[in-house]
Image (cartoon, rainbow, N blue to C red; front, side, top):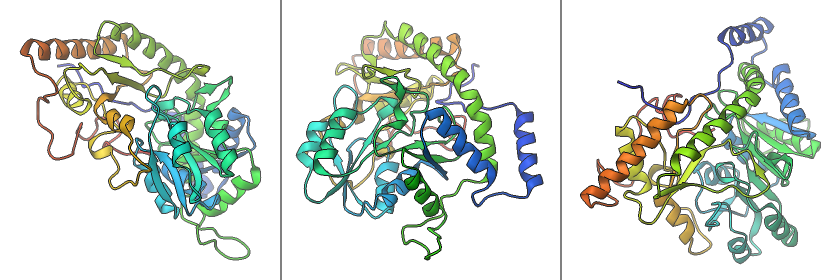
Length: 400
């Protein structure tokens, strides 16, 4: 029987190189607390991005929390109504109040018109997400933030390797956050980073990640969000593999686009002009006449040995997120957006299997005259359940 095709398989450097790097950490007896390997990884990442300020931390979620804390965002923060729960959770942990705003129908990024309507005297920042690596409307959101006199923060969790207008997407905004979780193109197994041009701001992030400790005492917003020396050492090795992984993912996307062209009821999400390459995720949109909803499709694909996710539905959807008003586009995304397996090691045969499964699912449903009916009914609001190991990383549903 063919092996299951997992959602993501992490980029791994040679095992002997990892063993040597870990041995060097142990020999040094410096395991954490802002050690030399953490600073080296920060330098390597900053050099790749061409910026002066970058601070690594324990996760992409704590990166958002630290960004909000360093900007003192204790009021309302406008975020996409359709986003991974880490975004709203991090704002809350930093003492802010997330407010969901609708998204653009094409790119699924924060809708500037909806943001404009949602701005009030209580708004302290705009926190936009580069959804599945696609740039948000940087110009429109920057203009709105400048006019309101508030910071513009971007969650660029998946955006390593993506450029916009010939510069790294991670370099836009007052602050952009990055995930270095193992599901991402470059990673440190677990980790994240706060990216900015202001070196003083990055220094304050380093203080906050270490309980806020300083000469005048510990800052109230401080937390333990440090990256260990072992994680940083592995991160440097993975970073050296990232350019080759980008090349591989570009080819995998081409195979997908060729194969999916014959399936009329789903289409790859478009990418904003002047941006690329799209190496973050293989997100597709189901058409209104699709034979299944996003969550049901993920479940049926699993029976075909293919793991996929509906990130805006079921267990991935934040509960009790206040909204500025109706968000019909975000609500529609929960039933129509699916992420297919996407990593550089997917072969032509793998992509062929996925396309064949989708083709057979569509044909079978239409023959029976059924629509939007899952093979196994999800319980409650849980959707797209996948077993342990479905990502190749352990338990599913985690974000850095």
